[in-house]
Image (cartoon, rainbow, N blue to C red; front, side, top):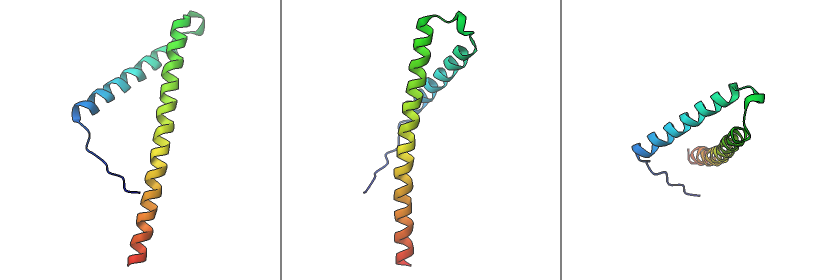
Length: 82
């Protein structure tokens, strides 16, 4: 499998980092509000943010697994050729 990695736009990377930090701050604030003071809308928003984080982490785990497999194959090929 040949994977081509393209360089990402600096602006896109910056905006994604800002959005991620904003979500982190929102979660941090929501976690510190006592449960009895939270509205159903706040609970729903927190649930959405947590679900998005879980989805992102699962995707990253899959990418890392594939990357490790490709690196292991490359190492095996290098060892066979030397």
